[in-house]
Image (cartoon, rainbow over all chains, first blue to last red; front, side, top):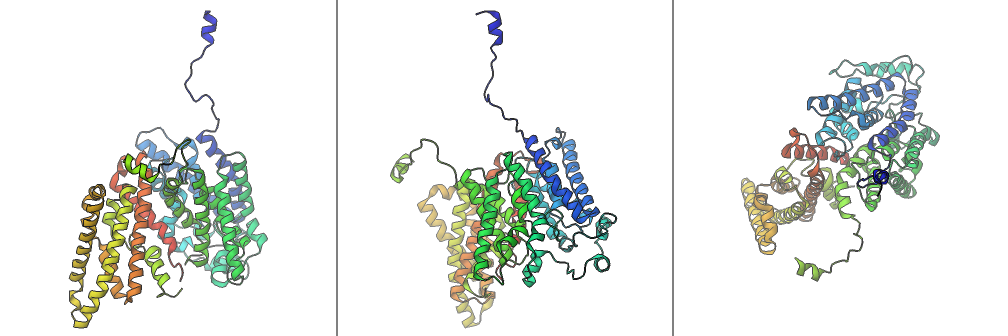
Length: 357
Length: 193
């Protein structure tokens, strides 16, 4: 063999087929998919929403970076996953939440929801939802104070409670709202109206999102389109989103057929609240959802059912957060019972198994 | 749902006021045997059995105590009943599965001091449940305990290979998980009312 031929032989270990989809490429694309939703949120709620997104993302990135510096590890901020957590935290908080509370939520999300469990790849619960569940308990009143969307002066002034001095309770919004809010504003989201007074909201408003609610949860169609981008690029497991939405729609349709005056129709169920955002961006978190193919369907169906059960029969108007957290908690068990059969394995009969043991 | 209907009593003990995650009773075995599913599930079943036996006995004893007007003996007699129920379960497990008996170790006799069981017996007395309601209540409480234990064990198994920071070793991560699970169960607040 000549020297030239020998030089052209290159020895490599497997894998020989490499996919360009590394963690940071996928995560960066998720951030791209979140950006239109952020833009809509700012257009919908104005300056306060912008500040909320900036503060939450900043605190999230800072928390992870400072932790890495403190423990003398190479910083993991570059994988973009913490940016997703930060943006998601902002999108699921009410726009009038004081910024310092948002910062605490973001810190809790990253510190207790992610770093404490060993960082990316080990967080058993979705970090953003951990933060929100914490704040729901810690700051109950500000977390359930809603402001109307599309206020005329939203680009020039903050919602007054946004700028509350850190560690102080926000003041009442009543005076400000009576000046700026449209007539008939009751301070309720569509879900609360449905829960307490069985008042529906127009489908077009629900789908295009010019309604009150958490900062980024309102535009159902936009969120779905952004999710579609990720699904087409195969960077998201569409089966989870699909099964959640279909289950929630079918299950609520069943109750709607039984009693249309008390239970809302499926369009309302899908468009209102954070179901769309949760199903597209939070339930599909690769780490905290089951790994098996069958398990993914079970997980989606479970979350869909829980959302409807909590919304219709629970004490709270919105149940997406708790439904997804429950799904996260159950996902190790779901993966375990839905293990695929090993190729070529022969099922042991009970007798054989006993003899073998 | 009616607050004293059987299905609501079950749901209440099972999810809404879950003994571990909402009332914070029985945390010792909850943290102690939730390392693996192999121990968590049998432990849950053992607790269901003990709760069921204790519920039946507590109902009978309470009737007798009330008849003679000696309710002050309630606490001590409940404890005695629970201890004997645990002895019964212990003997059965030791006879039929010595491996499991060794795996559960000290936590099996410790069911005696599991406050979830005493709590269940006292709650059913204070709520004036009828015999049927007491049985359903004890089954719900036991099933709720098993559910919490199983969820916890699944999560801890998943975290076994995790790259935990030094400050989040065994006990810390268990309590963290317990806290997060408890936050999760707040979603059931007000269910069915």
